[in-house]
Length: 143
Image (tube, helix red, strand yellow):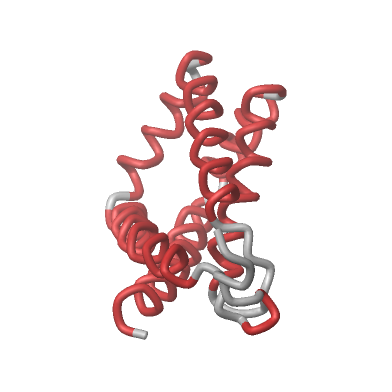
């Protein structure tokens, strides 16, 4: 590949097609999951309860989270102070959460139990995910 083929990170144009693709992919996923979480809170509470009782599901979630987090970070590790940083942070958060899920599943169960104990936390998580999804959708589809 010729030198200078990619724009420099300093110019702020690093891998923009990948950023837009990932925003188009993750934005609607976050929106749909957030709306489901907000509108069907009891169903999601049952999912968390079932998850907390299943070591196999906990391990599978850790494995899939690590796989997706690494894929995201390897594809998009952009540390610029703009909307693309959201994608990078999602990837790194997924990696950290996945490693904790695999190596310390009891901590994940404890966190799940705390989420279940606080009714307002479900709504807060839903609202945060909705905002992230709307921002990513905006930059992916309309910006």
